Image 1 (cartoon, one colour):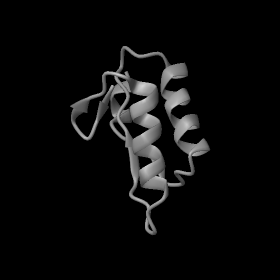
Image 2 (tube, rainbow, N blue to C red):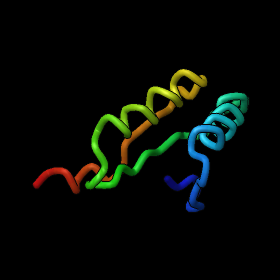
Image 3 (tube, helix red, strand yellow):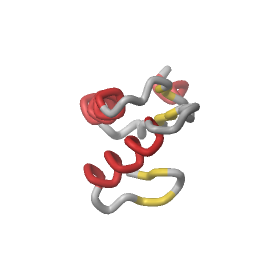
Image 4 (cartoon, one colour):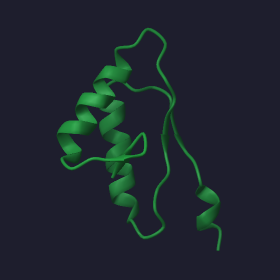
Length: 69
């Protein structure tokens, strides 16, 4: 998993910390997910659900055109 282009070694804790910090900002940044074609959807959905539980309200998938084939 990458966060802002950097690999996260401990995804759960790092993702929670970064997501909580983003959610606490007065104007939230957009949270973009670029799923890998080889990753099952349940993992992508898990990241989205986790971000939503932490208060992220602007969540979007990018790069979805890779799944059109």
